[in-house]
Length: 255
Image (cartoon, rainbow, N blue to C red; front, side):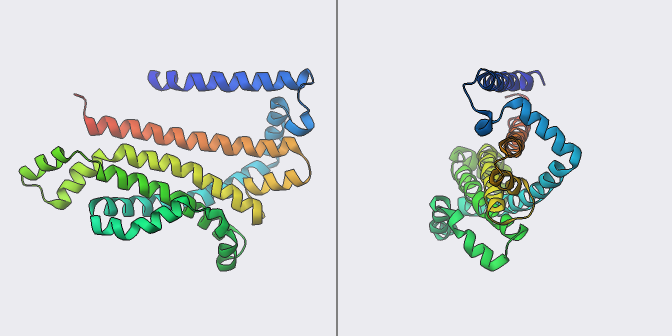
């Protein structure tokens, strides 16, 4: 716990320093609060929205859409990544689709999803899934392919078959790359949720950003942005903590 605290403390201090500098810049007139708001006003808006229930309602909608989209992307991305990383023919078959999805401007598919699923949660989930799955699959594939060949040969020399080598050697060794893909997927899934809600939703944090932006209510808009950033940091740090625990189990106490 002490190591985690030491790792988090510099980030907290830097965030506090930025917030203090922002507040001071507004106070002395260097920044116009109409365009930038200020931390104290944003904190007040968050408190007011929390009391009214709007913050909880919008956060719940976005979290549900994010959870479904990211969860599906994690399952599909990891499964396909493991299979493609372990089987060269499967990798060759999936490679064009993977890199097309990874490099294409996928938000351009939004009108297509609207036609297929209509405006609302299903389209938001589809966009989140489409943005998050490629990096998860690519990282998992890379992790499985880069497993130390000596470990695989050693396992096979003790009589381990293909499935056993995959389960007991390749998968544990590829955990860091899988987690790295999941951390990339978190950010992309949140991006997909926010963008899709901006374009066509009636609730959610992305919807509230667009709504308050149209009304030129910068403080309320920034409050929703703060919540989204906080969620992204929280999910990423949670995955980092999981990675540390799994890596400690994988390497064992003697390493």
